[in-house]
Image (cartoon, rainbow, N blue to C red; front, side, top):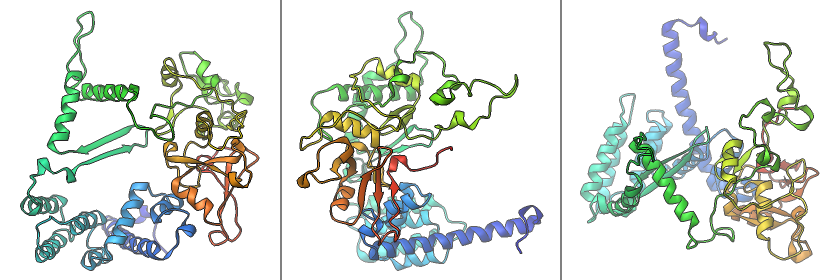
Length: 439
């Protein structure tokens, strides 16, 4: 029987931590191998996604970026057994394997095959064991790219350009970019006139940091772009900022957000009452809708929840589209019998589904299409209770597989998997409706 952690001696603590770390490495390697085999053998219909990454994200706690990394490793290591051996024996980390694999798959243009093999072997050796350092591997890759990478010097090589946009757990967006000199010059030129310190009208000094001024300038450039009429369309409309918020919250002009903000109509009194003078109420009913589906707070389709105060600030200068919703967040009075989804219907579908409704997908609403549950060609109307937002892949999946979708009694889409996925064909809620709810 395994001893409790608090019972272990110092030496046992150190030994157990090291042993567990090695086991985790081996399990990581096995997961990569399993996913690689899934990628080869399991059909898209059974997965319900274009590949294993979406399935992993929807069935495990993995983030999309981590799932994609595992799939990439599973595919790549089949072609490079030496990298796979180092990972499978637990002597090299997954991160180092990914770095070396990227080099192996996209070597410098003028590096001969023999040189590629020698360099890869040297990197694997450098990445082996506890003394491995990422810096040494990156240094080797940089030297090889500079020497054998072709005629273009690094500052002029647009093939190296990358731009990352990652949403954080607290709802912010972190940007990271690596651009060629010309693209960089364009960006800095556009930012320059907007990043100068600007004293207030009364002469007070601009105390914003340079980083803050650049961030404000970047936001200003985005405002100007979105206000321009010369933009490509997406989902039938030019890109613009969309905010979903209930009329009750929009018209509530109280400056302070008190406990009423997390109550429902049946329990508005419980959150600001107390069991006694010193202890707040613990009535669970007051928090019943705490884990909702985005209908009880301001909601941005890309970034998610937004505070009421900031939502009302945005609403001060906007074009308002009124969409009547029932108690379940289902749009009402938008039935139409035209072939195509109208602009207002699309707004209503976005308010209801938020994104691709297929369970576990959640692709942004801007990348989705309106799917007729009862097909138009078979007499199905273009009504809200016959429409669901689906990304391109899942739209095709619904048309060419045994997956089914229906609008439930709650007014939201529910999906029935084929018997090959779930023998009992148990319905699954749409992506935006899945998850925990406080009872």
